[in-house]
Image (cartoon, rainbow, N blue to C red; front, side, top):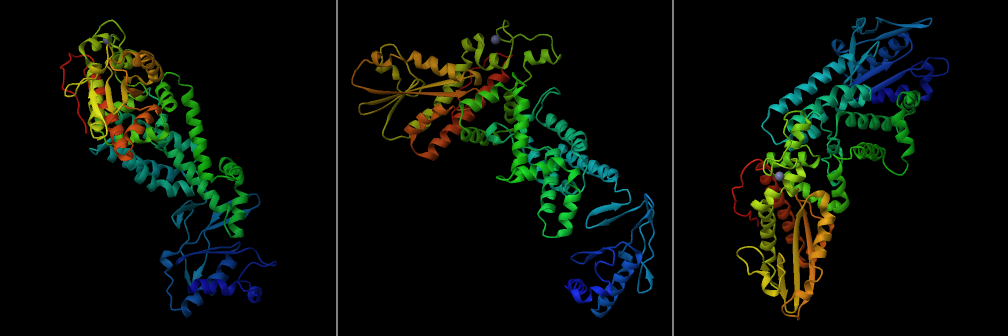
Length: 525
Ligand SMILES: [Zn+2]
């Protein structure tokens, strides 16, 4: 407060002539004050001494002690076309303030200043600190999802300040810090070296994990700094902004073009577009992500991720790998040159791809693996449908009356009846790329179901439910919602069907080269 009074006093129009502030006949002077930290910037040593004298007197009057050992002076002068550093001779109470030695740096408000203003030392320090955090995190026995969370919430907060005040250049951050993160993420998610996992940076509704790379944080921090400078109320600061615009073309373009949305959102959209574009070029790896976004509601994908987040590490990792076809099945192992035989361990005839293991192997069909998964999800569905008091339930699994009693030849998965109303529910577990095909097949199969009824009095409604091998439910699930009605029960049911499908597919996957041990049905409530 005392220093503020001093600055306001010497800034008054009537005492400008005393030379305490800028006027036409004197060189510009700046006094920067942040809490109890002062910085004087003047064009000559004499001007600095003039301000220091009044500052010293003011402090003596206010009974404040200036700690000379905590002060520094730094000098730069121009000789013709060259500028060089010098050691200024400045005093407080006849005692010389120690100058910053030649080629040395000083710290003001957390930023390092030196004659060359080089950032090499800071880069080295930040890389070492970053490595240290990630290495420590790597050693912790934590779920990979939590490791990513610690990076986003903790590690990035530790480097955000440097990212805001130093311009390291995006290329440096990408090459030196992004590369560290990418390496560890691959390790934690057990992904092969060749894997492209850029979808992790997408929002959850686009099947990502909303994870950012250091270069994203850097771009964001620089943009925030530029935005603050641009919108500052101080003319001096806006002058600095204007004179440095040419060094920040990317940020400036975002600040000027995003009139309708916040600059940070503009940057986020730009990053998402860039990733989506690059993923679009990966036709094979991108196919599940594309199909799911086409057939499932965004809200369903967000719910699906909530379920996956609660699963143990092995299942979480399985899902993340399966989404981009990076499971170590025989086909991939042969492609990665880790094995010579790409054939299925069960039927020995087809190539062991993800689709083959999870949905297409004839040996698995015969041993009942897919029926086991189907009936496990069906059991979960029945657990919830039995809670509806207005309906009587029939299901094609042990423990329930069989729906076949209503038909001559058909045997739908579930029948629920209420007075003359009969609802047929048919469940399909299929591969992510076959969601539409499977639905059309079922629709066709049950086309003339009405004609197959033993009794003709029924008012029939057919509901087809598709759950993918990785637990996604399609947009058609809304038909089930109209039966369940209670939102919370419906949400719990869908989440449990997702979990059952994932757990069952994972078990089928782990048994891909082994005999089937006929486990009992998974039963979730
Ligand atoms: Zn097979």
